[in-house]
Length: 343
Image (cartoon, rainbow, N blue to C red; front, side, top):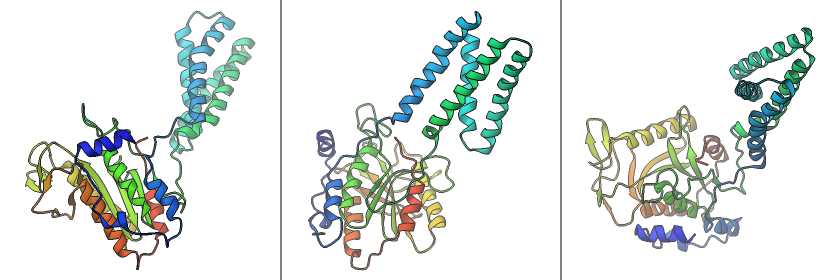
């Protein structure tokens, strides 16, 4: 928390002036829980127990078991034995992946190992055949137990959960050699908005049909969804500039890719959520000392804001809409299902 406050101060980001920070939400349900979450720093999840078991099983199966098998069979080719165990384990994992193509490939490879073991038994080499079948059985047991580690968890929305996904650590994605991650900074700020009834925050999203994460953060409030990407290149003034590749944020160090990415993501979410949901894409400059203007909105409807202005735009807008606001759990579910997250 101390590093977060220092980073915000060093960038000149102050958010004390907005109406939503001084609004009394005590008449709404779960306000106390929301206020506690708004003041907390979301930590990256530690490696799960199942993942730790997989690492230990992988090391034992690929490195330690071959040494034992070499001693039992009298073979002098340790590397071949290690490779066999590695391929066997990978084949077992993909069989349990539940993806049709991978199941077919994994089954074919595993079948070859099983045929080889049975053939050894038929030729009278009982030790080699028994070891082959035993090793294959162990590989499938490890694969069955640890396959969930590699599957994307299905996220179900809950009124008790107001933040979905995890932004990178301060020196993770979006960081420079001496600059903490702009994604981390923006995530910290947006998490504060959850004290407002009905506001939900999502980190690390892949819009419908996208190949990879293309939205750093999203905020939903009823039928309004904000898509937010962060930017900081050291300039003191930002504006929309057209160039040969499209619309860019600043004339230096920006090829227009970021603007096109968030605008395209907004189009995909509009198609998925329908005309009744208002999608607002925003690029946020994670500084409080620069300036923006004169055009704040690009031709494709992408807003350009300072970080503190984003919180005012979203937070004060949410407060103003509370008298007529209605929850849209189906919107939250769709956003949650597209969370990939950086963790």
